[in-house]
Amino acid sequence: MPSLTASILITTLSTISSVSAHGYVSQIAVNGQQYQGYNPSFGTQGPSLAAWSTPQNTDLGPIVPPKYTDPDIICHRGATPGQEHIAVNAGDTLKLTWNTWPETHHGPVIDYLAPCDGECTGAEKTALKFTKIAEKGLIDGSTPPGNWASDQLLSSGVSWDVKIPQCVKPGNYVLRHEIIALHEAFDTNKAQNYPQCINLKITGGGSSAMGEGVPATQFYKPGDPGITVGIYNPLTGYEIPGPGLWSCGGGGGGSGSGSGSGSTMESGSNSVTDTGSGSGSGSGTSGEMDGGSGMGQGTNGGSGSNSGSGMESGMDDGMGGENGTETNMCRREIRRSRKFRA
Image: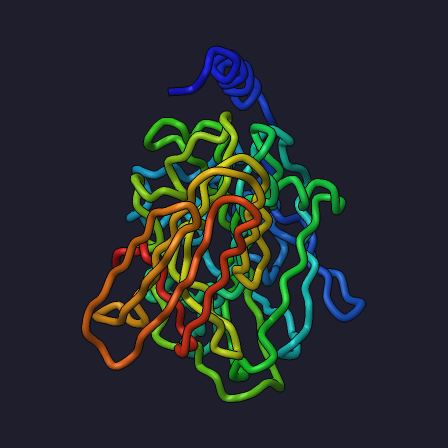
C-alpha cells in the first residue's frame, strides 16, 4: 500500500494527468534529412508520410491494458500504414521527436522492428511480428516517482535516438516506437501505452533476420510486473515488459532484481547496477520459450532458480543488496523475458 505522502502525490498527479497534453512523434531525422510525423489533426486528409496514420486518436489518448489484445495496441487507434518509407542504412540512428510529453508521465521507452512481406505501405498490421531492438526503463528509483527513460526523453528536447541494428537484413520494416506511462499503474489496467509506427527501407547490413518475432497483441498482459507497478514508493529495480531484447551479438536474456535502498541504473544493453543495503535475489531466464535453464543468487541470502528442457539455455547471475551488480548473458540471439507469456 502506498504511504500517506505517496497517496497524496498519486491523487495530485492523477488529477494532472486528466488534463495533460499527450503527444505524438512529430518529426523523424536521419542522415541530415527531416521527415514529418503524423499529426492526428490531419484526419484522413493528411499528406503522404512514412509515419502511420491514426485519425481516430483525436484526443491523443493512450491504449490501456484491457485493449492489449486489440489491434489498436499495434500502432495506436485505427492505425493505417504510412504511404511512404524512410530510407536508412543498417547501423544508422534515427532521432524521433515528440511534439510534447507530460513530465508526470514516467515510464520506459521501447523500440521494435517488424519485417514487411513486400512493401510496408500495404502491410496488414495484425500480421506484423515485432522484435525488440532497444529498451530503457528505470534509471534511478531512489526518490519517487523516480528518474525514467521518459524523463531522459524530456531532457533531450522531447527526442529519442533509435539505432538500427548493424547486422539486420536489408528490407522493408515497420519501426514501432513506444512510451509506457506508469503514473497511474499502481492500479491494474491503468498503465498507458503510446505506440507510434514508421515505415523504413533498410539497406546494407548483414543477413540477420531477427528470429520469428511476436505480434504486438501478445506483448503485454495487465498483470505483468512492468505494467502494474507503483512508482510512488522507492524502487530498486524495474522489469521492462514485453518480449526479450534482441541484439546482433547475441546478448544475454537473463534478468534479476536486487532489494535494499539505493539506486538502479539501466541501459539498453540490459545491464543493471543496484547500490544499497539489504537482501537481494536474482533469477535466470530460459534460453527458449520451450526450455532452458537459469539460476540466480542474491547477497545476504536468498536464491532462486528455474530449469527446463531445450536445446538452448540462458544464464543469469543477479546479485542485489550492497554494491550488488546484476549481469546477464545468453548464447541465443533472441532473448525471451522470464515474465513474457506468448
